[in-house]
Length: 70
Image 1 (cartoon, helix red, strand yellow):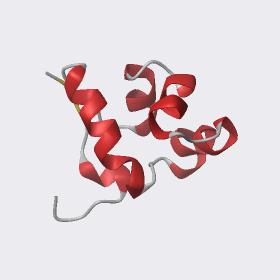
Image 2 (image 1 turned 90 degrees about the horizontal axis):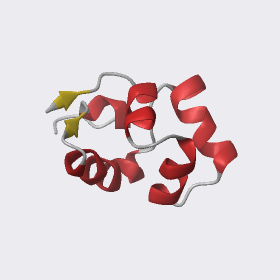
Image 3 (image 1 turned 30 degrees about the horizontal axis):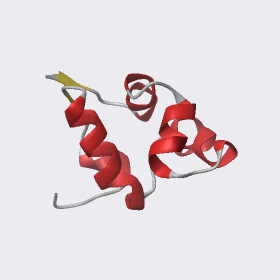
């Protein structure tokens, strides 16, 4: 299993911003800020993105979604 450590790595592993927008139903301008300015994702995208990562044999720390105690 590949362990990803940054928001940028997560986006790249999931197929880029367009694919992440499809997964999360986010607008591209909004999603663009996640790996660049915010360096994290909204908590509301945690479940869908973690499932997508698992399907691609990858993982990422919960803090990239501002999750604590997970």
